[in-house]
Length: 126
Image (tube, rainbow, N blue to C red; front, side, top):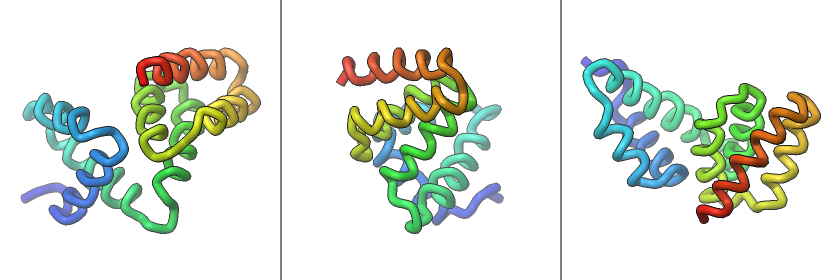
């Protein structure tokens, strides 16, 4: 028996691919082994199906919120992934800058500098 609802997983899979790109998501799922696959599947259903699937907050706004929260946590690998996703969801360079300013105000200049470094890399990679 699955630890998640299949419909929620499919909804989450579609949202995850729309934001992060199908190749990225399919690679993560394909590389999941017996140890990590249950987490990948549950996270896809819960985070992406339940969380991102809630129509009350649009994908662009949700991306902006995620950047602020992940930036506050200092999880820069995830911040890079979600920075790419935010751009896919329509977040502009000016909006990225404003989000990083808020991170700097509430989380400190060193954290903002890390976010600027990663954002620059993402923007240059196109």
